[in-house]
Amino acid sequence: MANTVVKIDKLVKRYKELVAVDHLSLEIFEGEVFGLLGPNGSGKTTTINCLLSLLSYDKGDIQIFGKDMSPTAYDIKKDIGVVMQNVAVFDQLTVYENIDYFCGLYIKNKAERKKAVEDAIAFTGLENFVKFKPKKLSGGLLRRLNIACGIAHKPKLIIFDEPTVAVDPQSRNKILEGIIDLNRQGATIIYTSHYMEEVEQICTRLAIIDRGRVIAEGTIDELKSNVKCSETVMVEARDVDQAMLEKVRALDHVFETSYENGELTVKYTGGKHNVVRLLNTLQNDNIHIGRVSSEQPTLNTVFLELTGKELRDKE
Ligand code: ADP
Ligand code: MG
Image (cartoon, rainbow, N blue to C red; front, side):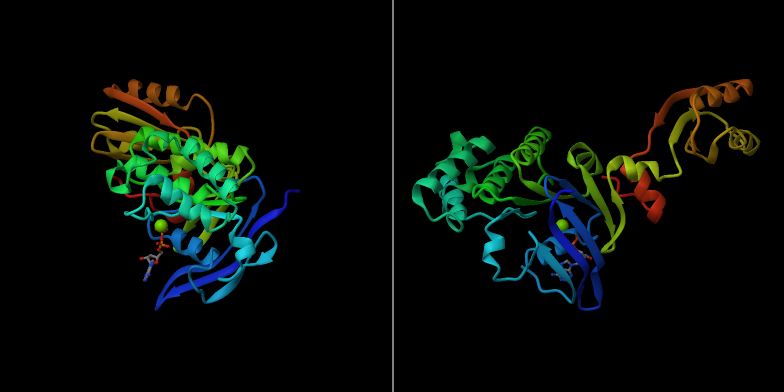
């Protein structure tokens, strides 16, 4: 069994009457890329800030590397790297100086620090920009600088809080690949996001949070195997009436049907060849069929079944 890196026990954080984190418990093990997935406002950043002792909280216990976390626990903090949601670098310092500054908070030895800063520059691909000031960097490069500043001191635990928001797809993939690399090199990762696709791509285990609570936890496969809906089929179809809907509803494994704006949606609890059976049924009644698609369950399906809402607002 791997060592526990982070243990959060019944954490409660209130902002006046708003309960932002509500008895949240988590255990994260060495070597994991652990996802904290939840919609905007679900309490991810607040949880991270409490975890880092950057924010006081109302109740709960937090241990990191088996020790109690506190604002002055520098022996713990030196082994943690943080990449915050909002880019936090100094405008008057160059790329190199920024990374050197943050690295210098933890590594005092000059030669060792120089090596660490250069590693971070190479890792984030900022070689050609070391003399640039942050204002001259594109959004994607700025994010990479933010990451370089957070990881240069080679921490054992690295926390990424929505590092890809408003980042172009190319930089986004680079960031995700970089996170996998850091994990391969031995770092335990906590990754918060409201993008389920990213969490599916890189996380070994995750917790889904909503309104400050963990509503589901496990590997992606474990979470998906618990959902009722194993397949959703969508068919563009003309003139589907109530009688037709009932016929579809009566097909094997169907548990829900709806028809809106010329699109028929059918949800299945299991079964094979669902699409073929559905299309045959429609054709037998001379229903005119357009585009057809089938979806396997996603983390959004998990979220939808648990909360009745979509994981994120349509963008
Ligand atoms: P997430 O990171 O998942 O988007 P946050 O942790 O930022 O969520 O926010 C959780 C809830 O707490 C939200 O309802 C948010 O509006 C509220 N909140 C966050 N920071 C503050 C603050 N400083 N003061 C008051 N309310 C806050
Ligand atoms: Mg946040």
